[in-house]
Length: 430
Image (cartoon, rainbow, N blue to C red):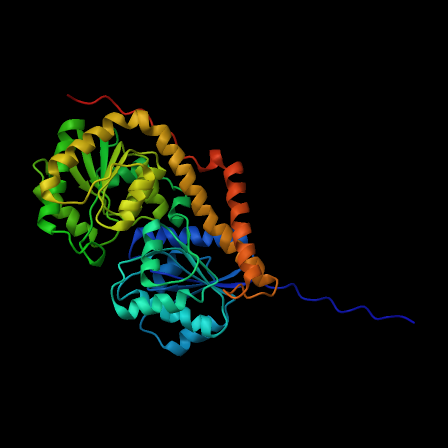
């Protein structure tokens, strides 16, 4: 008796993974996060089908042409979004600072919709706070409690979630953008921006007050940063280049430039650049002073001595982890202290370089841990387990896999994770 062979089974298609965040070209930091998350997920699941939920789908399609589907999630039919969420195997929220007043509820509405349809959800190194509004606090407590795994990028975000009343294990890693790869910023691009190719260059980052920096007084901090820029021009015989990390920064860079006594030594980058190109530009700098978190991250990745100007908890936290000076804020009356810290940063950097390199190795390893945790969750999903909070075994696998991934990265990638060795600072003009 002959038994007929079973017909060949079609190859299983990869998982459908959704990524939700503040994407669409509004902020270079957010775009760098999207780039790094997609790179992580592709490494974990090369056969995955990606759906990015963007605030500007056209921009995301243009800059990420290899993403299978990109959907606008603002101002569109809820039914349309619900259908897209229903077909996912996993929804990734983040990363970046998206859980704050008036915004958290908007993102978490989509996450709740996915959860109601049985889709596992993962918080990918998100930032949280401030969270004072009742509706946002309730959304955070309710929706994050049902997530498969919660990873935040800094200790302050974990404290915010605890204060809100979230009773879940929360893992602290580091910002996903720490894994960004630089792209060339050529001499021709420098000439197009009017930046002298052989001059000593100081990068500066300024920002609008906005909800993340409500206590900033525009006039005071514009004048303060103009004082810093003029000091650097004189002290280092430098040109100052302002790097707008989002479009509103251009106006504030012009305001600082207008307060300078040496505006001819200042430039503002006006070109439209990818996050990797902005990171590539950092390698041309000799020193960096800035407010935007991802400007500080990019400078540290490039091995450039950097002075963060803290305006919020996330910058304080990263400055602490970087071992940078613990400034208390950005106010005009602190001008003397700030100038002294800039001077000391330059003088002490040759002695601090190795310490910075070690700290950056630790931070990049933590950023990889988020990716490892997401990969283990995908393994659990592949095995037929939802990976939800009620699955103790899945949670244990996530913990074990993340630890294994971190150990592997630490053992394998000490050299890979190291930022490049910067050249010795050129002698000061005195």
